[in-house]
Length: 253
Ligand code: C2E
Ligand code: CA
Ligand code: CA
Image (cartoon, rainbow, N blue to C red; front, top):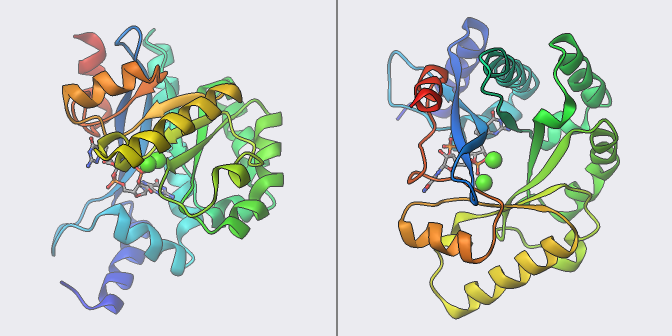
């Protein structure tokens, strides 16, 4: 393991030299079983040293002020992929993870909207994912930004639902189109977790939100997602994050 300073210098170099790349994880429509969307996830191609996961380098990019560059790169890769699948006659939607720092920028929604127009993509093909694990004041601060994205027709997903400390009541005031149930809920086996899961799904459905189950690793998890009448499901059982050409192969199969 490199000392933190070396890692920071390496990440700066990686961003500058284009050593990041995007992988895409399928999102399956639970009712039909077909791929309807993908989530774009960032990877760092390192030619030396141990691999570094996004859980490590995304917070580091935030700290170093590199997150805007990383975010622009990922949005571009994800929209280019959507354009590619549309042209191929197999349209897919895309979800992109966005950090609070990116959303805090005044220009964020304009930038996203321009990028969609540049490729003549419909806004509904894009969903922005924000994590529920943020402190509530940080979530409240980005609410006006979320309204702007929604007004443009872009989807907003509350990711990692069930991991944060905010109560369900407070989260009701956060404007989103989708709730992504964290894998700790899907994979949890206690009665308490199951109760929390059922309540979350009922409330989300009352709000008319799309419900996505994350962390589907086994047939039992998929059955649970089906029984809960989740709209979409994502997890290693259904497809790991993969390069764009592997998504193409999956679509062709
Ligand atoms: P996330 O947004 O919750 O993404 C889902 C993570 O769960 C991914 O990890 C994915 O590879 C992993 N995963 C998918 N299916 C399964 C499963 O069935 N079981 C288990 N155990 N894990 C599964 P990954 O790619 O390592 O990303 C970790 C986190 O890093 C992401 O969590 C997200 O918060 C952040 N991240 C990744 N790419 C980006 C990015 O481009 N921008 C920002 N801001 N954050 C990113
Ligand atoms: Ca996510
Ligand atoms: Ca998640």
